[in-house]
Picture 1 (cartoon, rainbow, N blue to C red):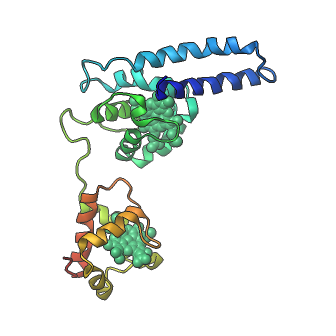
Picture 2: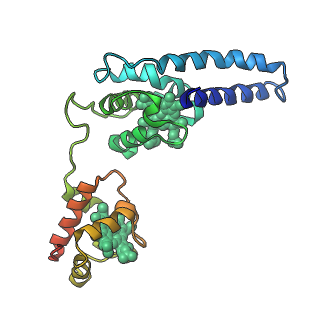
Length: 235
Ligand code: HEC
Ligand code: HEC
């Protein structure tokens, strides 16, 4: 049995057992048949979804991906999945932005397997997320077909918004942008070493300066910009 199917089976089993409990005490041996009967339709749906890859792969709409792969959990909220069209479930997730949601969906999160267990391409996955989130009040734009799903962020804006929060004021002991000596000393380690520390996090500084969705490349640009700002030349 594939991992995916057994996961759904165990989710369905949990649900069946807990509803059996809710309906009156412990599940008895005789309940097993009833439980199996309830699990079956779910297992069948997922078997269908895990079938041969669609010939239209890459061109499916958000709604199609959603109906094929995501409803199993997101329609009713199985395993704590945010329910499609439910504003309260989605509000905090919409707040983190489409890029972060895309990253977590690609990687998987909690009880959600990577890509929601689908064969969706990155673009298709984004479309499905846009479809679900917009039904719950978001105003996300679907990526244009063939375009890069995430436009490269302007590092200057990113830095001003997130990094200067600590580095302008020296909050948490961050080296201040006005403290040239502190930066010159850091610059002497070379840009690569500094980037590595920022990616990993260092002392009170969270990994990636708290910006989990920033790529290494973007981070590099922001750091270079910070060095430029203080007039310290990094190797
Ligand atoms: C096996 C059940 C399951 C399937 C199938 C599934 N999800 Fe999920 N999904 C979850 C659960 C559970 C969460 C909540 C995870 C958490 O917050 O710990 C979740 C959360 C999410 C989130 C929010 C992520 C975040 O960062 O908070 C998005 C977006 C999402 N799913 C998209 C999808 C899409 C798109 C599909 C279909 C391609 C899909 N899911 C299929 C269970 C599922
Ligand atoms: C929560 C506050 C905070 C935020 C936000 C933050 N930093 Fe920092 N940063 C620190 C602190 C504190 C240090 C000093 C860590 C130490 O030396 O122990 C530091 C150190 C650094 C250093 C020097 C690393 C080294 O090798 O010595 C760089 C470069 C840096 N931060 C870049 C960034 C960038 C880029 C961002 C935004 C993406 C950022 N920081 C966001 C607090 C922060």
